[in-house]
Length: 369
Image 1 (cartoon, rainbow, N blue to C red):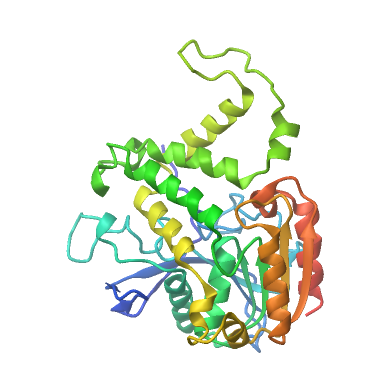
Image 2 (cartoon, rainbow, N blue to C red):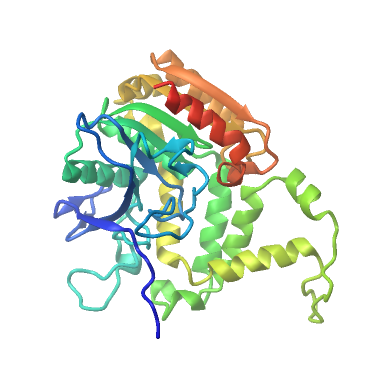
């Protein structure tokens, strides 16, 4: 006898039509989200959590879903983001395939046909606008803290640019105000790996499990999420016990590790959602919100009172220089900024695994508010 998997997601309808930044429209769209803690009487204990590109709304376990979340060690009672104090809302990004409307969703004009490549152009600003609509749905006019990791940090900046003052404070983790050429190049190659797969078939794939290009894209992604120093320390030149007998098969432990990631990823995330969200990151540039004047004008519009900016020197996708730039620009715009460069070897993924570094910094900042 099978049992239903626990699911703490809630759903909110977006205004219909929901107009996107580049002119497309969505009808009957929705967002999936989860919450932890309780909204206080003053409604001034709200944290809105923006995710990176691939996570869903399930950031941590709860009574409704006891499975560990993607930020399990960060969020919960007595943890750095303490749900005994904070009411936390984590949203699955518009465009994702984990409950919110995206390319994998069924078109409202069809009973069974998903959008796939017919989904309208998606920007980080659209993700932020959808989250603002969710706050309105929840009756929340202002949030105390907006927290964003990686792409989520871009979402926090877009959120504040679209609704200055809506977020009083910000925590920006391993993020940036725009994508650098190296990151754009990596993501462009990842998209090409997906698009060039014959089974992708111009978005008409029979099943996400058939698009092997997703596995290749994931391998490249994992390589770029960590640092060369970590690979050296973790694997050295260690060989697998039973190397593949195929020509150019797996011989090294690092190859086996990457293949495991590829196998788990293929079929677990929709290929079209992947390429749409990837391109949205490349397109984002906070300077576009400077009213045609300057990037300084864009930063001045955000109106954060305080901000915590975190990064690691070993991050090659969102390099530390970008977090330093964020901290300086926010400070010049009048925000009281706390900046930390974490000494982690774990590259861009450090915020997901190095809780000894990131946890205390975030806890200290939130406790000071």
